[in-house]
Image 1 (cartoon, rainbow, N blue to C red):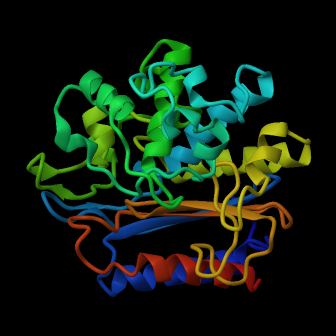
Image 2: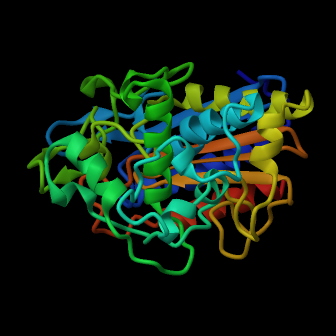
Length: 338
């Protein structure tokens, strides 16, 4: 816990105040806000409810969250970059080096030329959204569908398909499913419902989702590289601190995480651009990422600090205006004015 005189205190109080207002206005059921610096001083605070439909529970500091697409940067990106640094894979080689049967019936197709680096930076022509879960119930058959489908070719966009493929590559290399792998310190691929922030009433599964992954494709695949990780605010902050320390120590994995691949992206992460989630006042050293369920993490390497906003903004439905996009940016701007 940070001391009362900590430089984190003023930006923390300002950022948390915005979250508290959003909860009191009824736009978001609840959330946990946290900040940490390189030395490990941290501040965390919870507000609102972890669940309001199908039971009522208060939000707690030790509430677990479905981290959604934070899985991409906390788990999958880290694993792929560690493999690259160790020499086990070449980021500029095709993912067919680990998935040789990808689009195996069309040897000259564009999909077989896609590289690990392009997937990490969302620089591929895969579609932004694809309801893979609607094509069947068997996770092995759905993997085969992903690998053999003739994909629509479009302009590069943020696409879960990139990370579904990276997850399959990890599964091939380690000869085990994602959910059998080590999720990382403080993280897991499922959580006890009573300790977890509820997400959405899923019309497909016909229940409030709590303790199981919200993302339909990840659920149907029974684990994937694009979603499925659960964790608490302390786990997320511990991970952020490890990157701040790694940066200080010249960790090549962190160096790759910070390396720009485009005007918006690095390996896995986003970097500041007009309209991005971290707000308009971020310096060029900051990287960040968000998750659909209402999560986010931003790391400021120049100032040696990070902040995370974890909410259940999709509870009980995604089809409301939670204001999460404006809230994230406003919190980022508030933090970066101090």
